[in-house]
Image 1 (tube, rainbow, N blue to C red):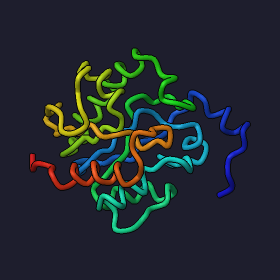
Image 2: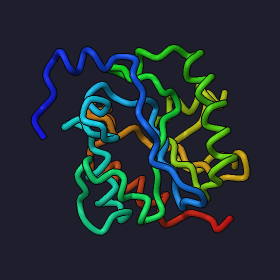
Image 3: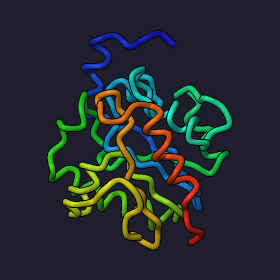
Image 4: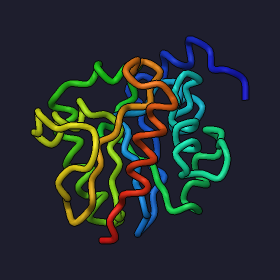
Length: 181
């Protein structure tokens, strides 16, 4: 697939992306919101600098390194992808706190309908805002909607605090420490 043009990326501002979701998933990964690039190519975590797919593989979630174009095949492994806020932006910090908080209600409806065993929230700052937990740390959080919750680092290339190996280590810990609910 050719790289999107600047005009295509600009036109994606405010658009949404369909979830990759099914009932009774082992893990539902929840991004903050879709990137403009991802919306244009139609695949989650599609921006070249995003480390989600590398971290997922290194952590042991996938048997090989998946390409963003294979995002729908995660369902076969028991995983899905959604976003807290549906509106695509160039950067997550373009979202308002009100949008993130409103996203919690949308997410609650998805959790109630699809009943994943675990919600892996990818972005500690957005988690703190959405769940009114200003002191939350990376790792397990209180169960929510009868679902186990993990707050994990955002895999965006803009998150300089975590490199791929660091992300993989934390994601792996979450994979191996899920409780059976």
